[in-house]
Every structure is written in C-alpha cells, then in structure tokens.
Length: 114
Length: 109
Image (cartoon, each protein chain N blue to C red):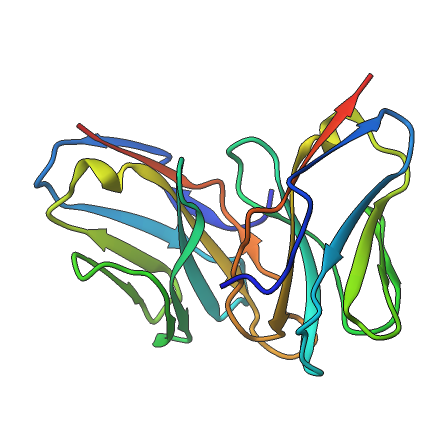
C-alpha cells in the first residue's frame, strides 16, 4: 500500500460525458502528479501540482483540467470524453524536496468510454 | 522524451540474480537515476535511486558507472513476483518522472 488513494477504481461512461477522478496523496506529501496509461501509449505525464499551484504540464489535453485543493487532495476533470480517453489514470505524490524525490503511485482509476 | 535506453525484454530464472542494464549517456550532473517497476496494471512502484554512488536497499542494488553514463539494477534473488516492466528514469530530484518503454522482465520457474 503506497498510501496514495484514488477513487473511483473503475468508471464506465459514454462519449461526450464528463468525469472527475480524485486523488488523496500520502500524508505530508505536497506534490501530486497525474499520469495516463493507455494500451498503445505507455505512461504519459499529464500535470503536476505543488502545494496547490500548478508546477509542470505535460501532454494534457485542453478537455482535461486538474486542481489541488488546500487539503492537498487533487481532482482530474475529463470532459467531452472520447473513446480514446479510455485508459488507466494514475496519481502519484511526493514530498518534493531534495533528497526525498521518490514518487508513490496509487492503484489507478480505470476509465472506459463507450 | 525519455533520456534512457533499456533492452525491451529479459528473462531470468527464479532464484538467480536479475541484472537490468540502462544507458543514460546524456545525464546531467544534477540528475538522479531512478528505477521503478510496474506489475501488470498496478501503479508503478519505486525501487531505488542514486546520484553517483552505488545504492542498496531491501529490494535491489543500483550500480552506477563512474562516468554515470550507465547503470545496472540488480535483483539479487529474483522471484516469480518480480515479473514486471522495469523503468530506468533520469531526473532532477524534484522534477516530474518521464517514463520510457522500460524492460519487461520475465522470471521463470
């Protein structure tokens, strides 16, 4: 158990819909990272937040948005869903300071878009 | 883009040491070498990381060459549960992780 909690574990929805994935980081971790893993793309970095502020952005679509709240949990919002958005979405957290750089990943949210 | 090169797949007999190589010839002085693994569709799991010295923990050992252009992850006594995709990643300590394609390690009985 990494200490990172993601909900829901599984989600099935239709094209055009909007979903929200939630992540609770490990206690004391200030950084949250979101990754997408689809069958043909491997693990793709989407976005990173540090203590409520966006810190780095990767290959995140404009239809997707994220935020980190004052209690440090994070949400990833996916809208106007397409079939190709079907994937595993992982959240990770870290303390984000020198010497403590390892990321700890949750078990993921599996999104299926029909 | 990933800054590392790993063989796509390797086999190892159960109980033997698994030595997974990684080339990172363009590594910068402030970049660490990290190893993660992903078992089936579970979340990636941190294994070990190092800057220039060799490192060992309860899971594995990390050997980094003196010029830091390559490294080897050693699982001293591989078990069937070590079958996974292993990712070697170089990064500044507080930066995001960029995953490459990794090495698929198959441990056989």
